[in-house]
Length: 555
Image (cartoon, rainbow, N blue to C red; front, side):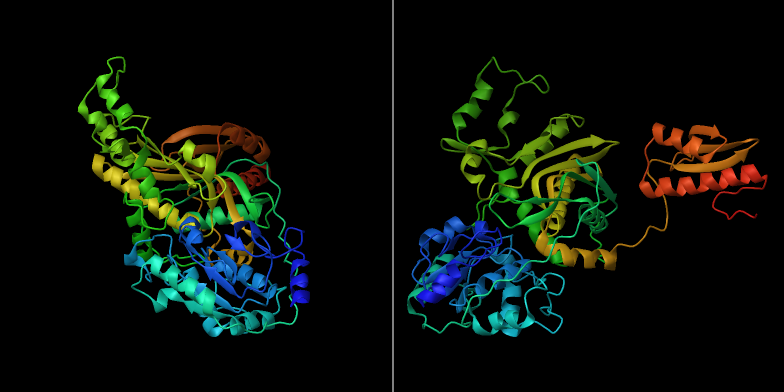
């Protein structure tokens, strides 16, 4: 056994160092070899979406090899690598919240979850195509890991599913049962004589671009997601998520996604790696719309926005009593504190209700902002689980309610779709309260990432769902190209009224597109279309033949 432990200690991990675990070491809550001396412990524990700080102080370390969260089905690939690199592990105990929305009402509602992926893997293994039935697009196993080795893990590690065995038990009762198992589980032989590690598939190269912000726009959330994922997959810069980690990403700094109709719930286009359902979206939105903080969670966006913590009730009440403080917009009054809930010395601010009440008094205010960030809290939490959503801002423009949302860090593959539907729910709530239609939903992701364990699935999704455009309608306007006398005439037309907005004339396509591109901006596909029509017009002018836009030249 000492020889095997020495082998495990001296394995090369994914960061180039030595030891175990061999992958995602920086995200593991506890592991022998990382947080304790490597030994012959045989049990792994996953607590899924439940906050680690709720679990780890109560979890026995006796016979515990590794304990960690398990957020998405994609994590199975890393799990398999770590188990193959430590074949002493023969058990996996599973407990905790199975989905990001921790409400007991939605447990089991979402079928494509990490918990269900783990169940499927240990029950039936993988197919000849290296897929888990029901999770084909959600889980990808690196081709460098032999199929037989993946099967060895599913066949030799026993899943103990406390969520299924104890469906009505409390979290503390499940932890207590896990601790009993850690002490009493039968000791088994290793399932491999020697630990094994495998090389990783190389990250595909991205195309060069100028860096900085990228903008994509779509009518619905699924359409916009496809365009955004394509942009990051094509141009994202290779970067690490943190120091001393193996979590490589393709990343765009400041990806801006503009969704024209975020309230559209049509899911006939469902390109997401974990397909969404209306029920799943509603469950997530219900949490966004609630101030409640479920047990076992560090925060929810609903709680942060609707019960924003203030340590001083006294300081807030002084706003009404201090004559030196003037509210120039609305005057002074009790309404200033009407969306504050006082709880002794502390208070909670419902920022969303405050946004609504302020817009009712001034629908054109530029100060309708809500935040989730607590600087004092983040002094400690930056290293673990600071909220990714930082700020939202509502503005009325063209008599519609636009909502701009800022995320500091964003998993664009798994996190973005539900986040977008969640923000759409807030937009709808505010718009209905002030009696205006919803306008644009703009989501700015400061660090917009595609994790390396999603690359293959993303490539497949883009091939399946992203099709070439069949029209060149552009919200910035349409172009009329004509021959007038000895010149090519190009007119920018309003997209709705067809009113002429600007006009250019010249002898050659190059002369015109140089001036037009300097004067205005347009979609790339529209620009390519316009260039084609201008070149046709130039040929017709030089040859003295007729030209009609969108028709072939008759030479």
